[in-house]
Length: 259
Image 1 (cartoon, helix red, strand yellow):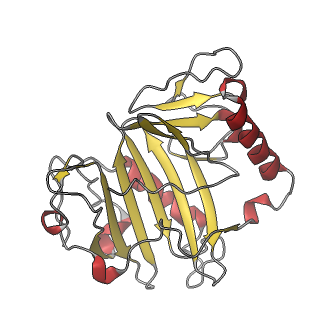
Image 2 (image 1 turned 45 degrees about the horizontal axis):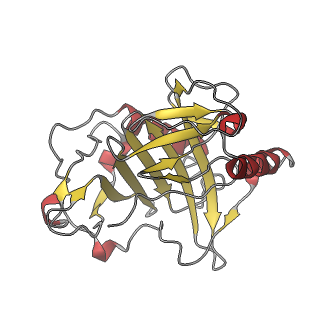
């Protein structure tokens, strides 16, 4: 089964795998948000075991040596240049985090796969996405009866640009570890990773990755929102407003059926 998408953003995000959970670190601000669990200090290099389903803040000296080195490299990369906010990360053409082709999508959850859905997607009816064309749900390759904790929906903006939202239920499956010294962005009170990525052929996407206790989100726009190719309104500020609206959206009691 496909793991939840996780953008590999060296400036702000460290993707950690700590058995048996997928532990993903996010972006940084000057101080941890009060909404986030500050993990108690531990001896240097002793990695505390994160609590499943929670967002945790770790200081550099709480990371094991190899991860501390990567975090220091990320901090240097984020601060060495005054143009760091305009950097574009080069990625491989076959990077699998790209939204799937529209003709492979499913119109509703019932026809998506044979897995056992364990996540109710957010109710997006009060967000801007409700006014976009709904393209469908991505299949997550679940086997019959296999638990499904990740859902991806695709939408098409009025200007034709694809927007994809992935939600991953962290409860019992993983936790998010935020390296405090790396936080640069927030969605509501939660740290968020923002990056613009491009392949050698010119394919471009903007990504915001954030999580709150219980759920991880990845919002993808197939455009460089710093220099939007259609309307100036679809800029980085617009994308973060959309992420804020998604964050505040209520959780549906049952899986929603898009129109």
